[in-house]
Length: 501
Image 1 (cartoon, rainbow, N blue to C red):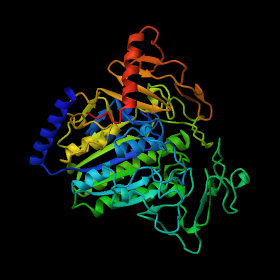
Image 2: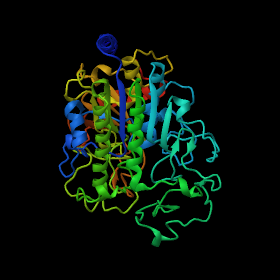
Image 3: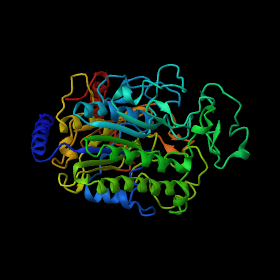
Image 4: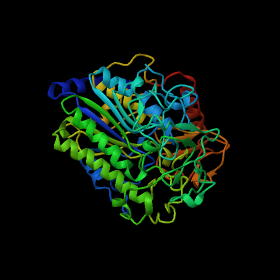
């Protein structure tokens, strides 16, 4: 009943706002591997993030905002589809040549905006697959962003540490010379280009684990590629290239309603900041790319200010999962971390079932409509589909966005409560509800040695009080009734085809 009441309230709220102002533009800036404690607005002191702090000061800073998963591909899938990724096979971390995992034609976050009359764009990291079972990189690459609702796209096919190391604008590789076609391989080597494992003397950044295959720009990657020499990116320029494309999209559509999904590469590995950011923090490349990320956010905010769109635009910032320090390259992130706490007070990080894996920065700003402040409401990125459908006057079908709740009232600061529970995903599933968090039983290492991440796996279910933010005191034995009830609810959510009211 409470969720139904909030939905009615949100609809009435939208009608009131629509009478006072036009539907807002929406810019969603999605950082990569940015932890809860990596921003000044969330307590960081060793790295300065004035633009993100400005966004938080002028908007609503959520303390209990979540991604659905502790890794990248599943989080992005859930955010764009409104469906928990563990419901669908094949939504794990994709190789660089993986096929598109979102079915063309299904209702997605961008298609919701398109139906509401918005022009839609995606710039930055994609990592949701492209094409079908076998990809020809040298022609039109389809299906892709266009087929799931984006009018324009300028993307990295996968991630910065995976081949192919090229940009795609709309459906084609940028600057591809047809006389130098691209070949990509993950199972077997293609071409005869040097690899990191064979020629470490050619590297300007060395891997700490994995990441030792084809060398591009002095950095060895996951996977093999050959050809496309003129099309290859330069890591040091990536933030500039992507930010320029993002701001150009805003400029080009300033007279229209637009939705921009700007998925930054920073602060994912390889961390290779532009020279003007090198040494800005004393924390090595990881700290420096946080500063670079903050600069990129500032460029978006300055563009909105210059075009007098600030009051007409919702700007959101979040991250795809929690933080990781050593994620495959020797970049001194561990040695120079100092007293910085990337996950803030939370345990774990990227890959982990502990709270640091999915509790991330979560900021929403809409000047004149959202009162600045802090919210403790429980919200998840999986809720964007239902929430923006409500805010733009759309209606979801029964099969659409099956796990997306309309929490638009919480996002706008009109309600102090969001959803009443959330499922977190990191190999095993966890259920946050009320004063409790249940982590289901599962197998696997307690610590992922490659990244030194506490994984949260245990042979028996674990139960933590929500007030135990560091998740140090497992009270499952003392509250068997709570474990039983939450386990039953989690199993029902898992077995049902949807959890949306």
